[in-house]
Image (cartoon, rainbow, N blue to C red; front, side, top):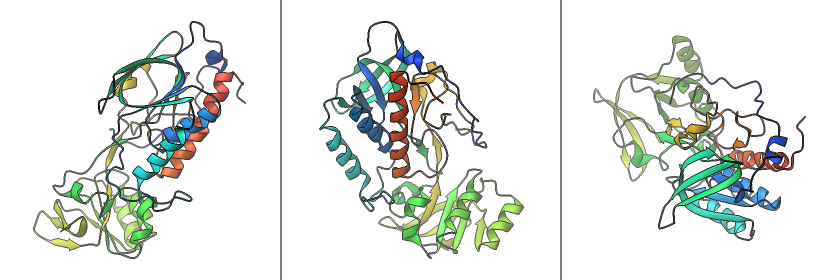
Length: 332
């Protein structure tokens, strides 16, 4: 993923909604194929089912938050394990005959007449599929790469976290680490300082933090440590310190890591979708991409809080736009 500033489009003007409603040729097998069964995809599926749309949800069963034991900030479900939230959502969808769910990894999406042809490879003994749909909703989220620190993954989701808004409260007023190598590390440190004024930012000798940024962080009680990291230390998922390459260990009580994220969009390469400087899909306010009939919702579309409730809301909003566009209601 390109580590570059995000440049959002002022507006995206795909073909008119009537292009979807007036498409010629035999009807597609589904009104909507949704790629990804995280909160954005499941929320969209529910709302589209309630709009009486024929929906197929394809999911590769590799959620990014698989290592997370509990999630926070989702109204009425604060503290629920992410896998339990997905189970409840799928259980609700099962009541709607309009929705079909299959474990499968989408390998290609191409234009068809009309709509799109979607190819998927089955997982967990599920069969391969090739289907057609009038429109496609990309809700496959992000793929993350953690800094190359030997033991970091063994602490991820237990002692180290990536979502500050999700897990900051539980770490209030504790000595914390922030480990990362990206250009936005200073801004993430400022956010963590809302919860703890005892924070050390570890750049691992890579991340770029300028003198002005370091001075601003210091004014908030945040220290920048530029030496190379040897490892994270602790026991049974509980972080006790960060071991530097020169042998010094800096004691901390957990913290955060900034992975590199990419949207893993190889399967839509033929569609020519507009991508921003972070490798994320550019959309308008309702989830329309630069190509008519292709929509996106959730973490693959924009920087910002990567909270389950935010993704679910985006899925619902985009579902409403899809339904209106399929009807042919003019925008504006």
